Image 1 (cartoon, rainbow, N blue to C red):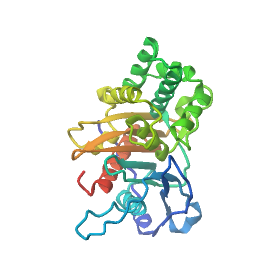
Image 2 (tube, rainbow, N blue to C red):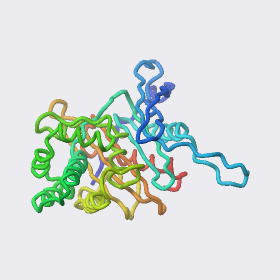
Image 3 (spheres, one colour):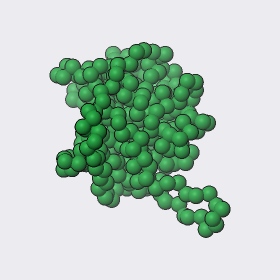
Image 4 (cartoon, rainbow, N blue to C red):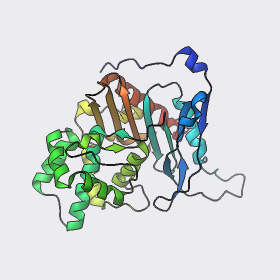
Length: 319
C-alpha cells in the first residue's frame, strides 16, 4: 500500500516544552501492581494531563553480587522511554506493549482521550466472550459458531460478527465477559454497534494476555486460547498490516487483528491493531489504538510507526 503522509507538528510546536506527568495510583490487577501511563500535553495546558493504569510485574530482589544480572528497568523508566521514542509522531493514539519473556511493559497516550472506538479489533473480544460461554456450558463451539468465528477473525466479516455479538448477548454479554477477563476500561457499543465499543490500549493488552496465556491466571482454557491464536495467525493477506510492522520484513510469528472505521460524523478514521510479534527470537504483545486520522492509509502509517518505535524500548533497541 502507499501510506499517506503523517501530519507533522509545526516548528513552533516542536519548540514548546513538553510536560510529562504521572499521577500516583493504588490499583491491583490480578495480584500485580499498577504503573502509570504517561500522557503528553503542551506545558501551557498541564490541566489536560490524565493518567491511566497498566499492569506491571511485581518487583524482584536486587542481586547482591555486582556480577549478577541487573534487574529489569523500573516500569516508570520504560514508560518515559516509550514517550521519548514516540515524540514527533502526531495524531491521537495510545499504545501498550509487553515483553512476554521478561514480563516488562510500557504504555503511552498522546492526549486526555480516555477511550477509543474499537472498530474491528473488538472481534477478538467477541470471540473470547463466546469461548467463555462455551467453557461455562462444558461444550465446544458449534459448527455454525466456528464458521462465524473464522469469517469474523480471518476475513473481518461484519455479518458474522453481528451474529456472534447477538449470541454472546450484545454489550451486556461482552461487558460481563470482560469483567472476568480483567478488562476494566472497555464498554460494549450500544445495540448492534459493536464497532463503537470503547476501549484503551492498556485493556487491549490485558485481552492479549488472556488470549496468549501470559497473565498470572488465564481465564480462557488452553484449547480456547490455541483456537483464537490460530485464527489470528491466519488473517487474510491484505489485513496483515499494523503491529506486524514491528516484526520487520519476515513477520514470522505474527498473530493479529486490525480495525478500521470511518466515522460518518467527522469523516475521520479510527485505525487500530493488536497482536503478537516476534522480534529477535523474543515475543511481544502490542496494542495500538488511534482516532482522527485523515485517511485510512495515514492511520495505518501512524499505527505501524508507533508499533515499530515501541518494541525497541523493551527489547533494548534490538528490534
